[in-house]
Image 1 (cartoon, rainbow, N blue to C red):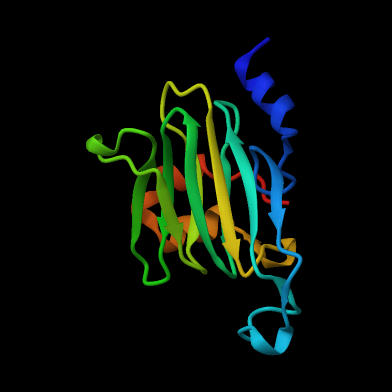
Image 2 (image 1 turned 90 degrees about the vertical axis):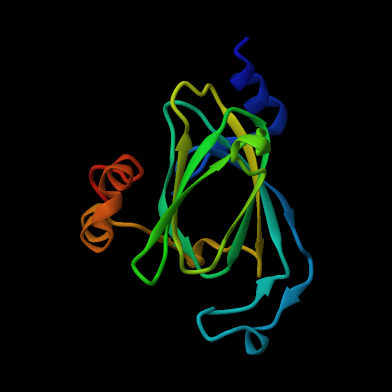
Length: 171
């Protein structure tokens, strides 16, 4: 059996319904932050935190999106991942999640709320197992999909990577 299939099976990973890649929620706090204690951008109470496993393969990518809360990525296993951040001030950056910290890779990346983000395996990669933690906890209502044309217009210096990290036709 393919090691990627083994990982999917052992961790019970399923296709991510919005973002691409494969995931499973591993933690959802049973304590909640009441709506009145949250910033106004949230439309209801949220768990204190959530966490997932997230798997990328050569035929998948994490489509450009942004969240209402901060997200922390953790690199666990596999090959390096190229991640694009598009910041509200019009700038952007490309980071590499991976195990070789002495070569400029990082095992952890923080994506501040409101930052457009997308990721894919670096060329030649077979898979990457990541994790993410979100606080306040993730709800699908907090997920905003990026539109290719709008992002390219706003961030022309990152056109090629935006095109690679967005579906050709946005649903």
